[in-house]
Length: 141
Image (cartoon, rainbow, N blue to C red):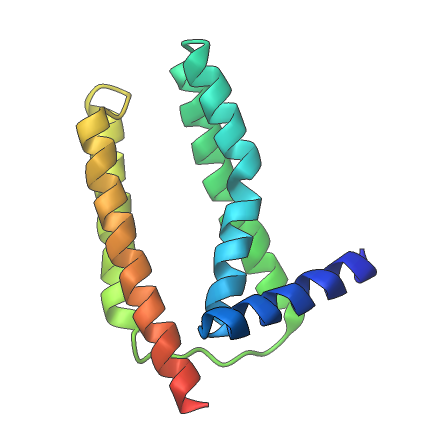
């Protein structure tokens, strides 16, 4: 695990230098993609088998588990400094995403393609704000 972790960190830094972007941005993208690959596979297979409720339940369970695990790991790590400069816009985007998701999922106990597109747009706005914030922070240091 330690050797694989070292290789992953080295390759992430090399990729960020090659793309001329902050290593934090590359590592966040790799982390988010790699932790969600199993959920994406379950979602695709269950939708293909016409069991959308399994995909929906997997998504909700994964989101709750990821938040819990990363919160526990953050607190175990010890004291940390929280950058609050870009917090307000991102906080409201996250809250808006949760509210919209809850409303969409409660209407018919499913999310239509148009509603999914709306959620993807909210996600892209979130990514844009986060990317801008990471770029701003990396220029400072």
